[in-house]
Length: 367
Ligand code: SAH
Image (cartoon, rainbow, N blue to C red; front, side, top):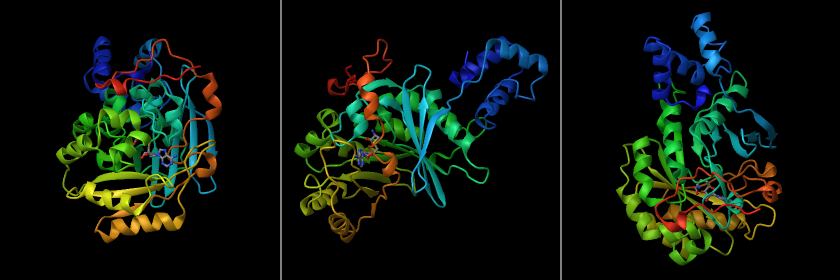
């Protein structure tokens, strides 16, 4: 049994089976999430006898990067091989004083956004909570002693809200201050393509919410993000955003990928202003990151600045997201190796939880 696969409750049951005092549950969890040990033997405040008993039944599973690629700008892309041989990617993004980790939540993705490389893979499977948390622990283990992760974003491969139970459990382990990794939920941002009915789950997790809007009319969004927009068209998404219970000093983030000739006109910018009117929010503009055979183009820098200027003149906070790690295919929408795609197979036990609308049922990749 891999101890990292257990929830806190399951760990408590195990401790009870051993006849251990209650505090021992947190003791073991702290070894996993705060000291990041990789063996039972290293849990040195357990007696030798207790460690031996535990080690008979259990071990500490780890996710080790199969490879790390470093970009000219310092961004690092870690490729992890999971127990079943499937691969996921996480990206470490230095932006002093911040050091942000971008996590994956699925192998591939449920959705089919036309501009996203991961979307082209289809969904291979959902990640388990320990595979999501494992990315954080693995990255923390390999950081230099003077480096610390300051932020975590769930913006890597996958749609977090299509795997919401596992994400919720992972967030619990990442944010628990007593025995967990101890991240403040304010330093964690979950990005969704807009699974409107699940935004309340994000509110309950206490983390920040980012919505990948990317279009301002349903016709346009149907083209760019067909699965999600058929299920939750713009009006539904907007209603859910308005209902989102924002805590004080927080705001929603809308991400908007700028695609030349698709959604980057002045009319688009004006419609975007109207769409978010009355919402406490900021806008992150992401100039499209190209990948091999991508059908879209990145707008010119002038076009991007023009788009931003319309938003800021209307009083919105709009930022142009610096695209980091483009040279290693580590930027937004570039995760998932095309070279791996021919090897994709229809999984026999996908473990993917269906979402309530047929358009969002997992699309599996074909061989
Ligand atoms: N499924 C989630 C998280 C993963 S995508 C979501 O949709 O939010 C993370 C961000 O990258 C999204 O805002 C998405 O719109 C953006 N993105 C995807 N492909 C991109 C590309 N090729 N260039 C720039 N941004 C892209």
